[in-house]
Image (tube, rainbow, N blue to C red; front, side, top):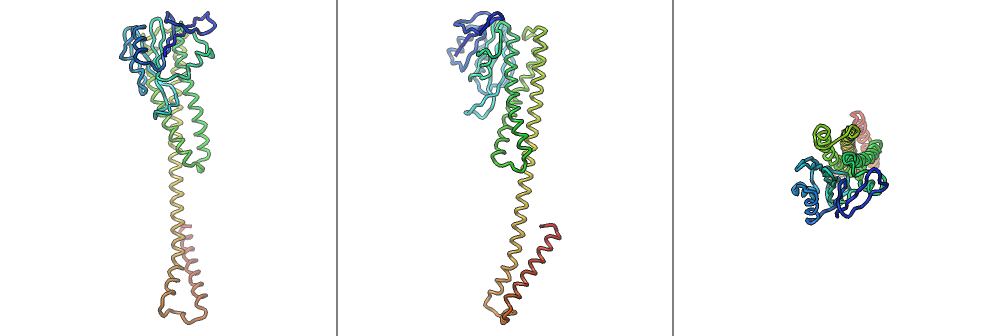
Length: 307
């Protein structure tokens, strides 16, 4: 689906156009072969690069061809059919247009389309920064959500069960995907400020620097949460291992204590002549003997700090 949006500083609302014009934002979602060819012809783009935008596993990078700059990045997306937590989006910056291509509908762009976030498609550099800003903020929101759950689990370390461990493993996977998306994105953001990929005014440069700082902090926060999750998992494994060892030790002690009366009772159950066999107090003597032996073993265990 191809949609053309247009808005100047004087316009009150974002307009939807039937055809492209100078200063337009063209948004393409899940393009087919015909739509992709139409966009390539419309803006004289590199078809090979644009084809990469349909690859769900495309990695963030920046390319320049024919005076047009192509920015591949990723945004947080809950994809049920893929074992990945981010989706790709291509931002193409031309001399008179901004083009975005995505394999799925981008939830973050709803802020622009609904008018919640004011944009001007004719201010290309500022609009590009706004796109990257909403992507960064969506990552920050995901981090905030995960941080709360991780800290909650850390405060209840001894009560963590299999469900919590599974959730932490999923968060670890999400954080790795997030870092893999943000780090290369931040690399080409730095190249923009130092190269001739886009015309930036002084205000745009400051906004770009703030964006790079936010992305760097995002990576640091993600790695910090990732380290916390790893520590929780290691602590949980240690606690479970220690509990298992204590359980095995308890069962071993109980087995030893039960073996003593079982052994003596088995001996006196034999059909042979045994000591005290004719005594009317044999049962009580044997019972006292068993209790004394068991008490002695318990004393030895406690003295050895096994109990």
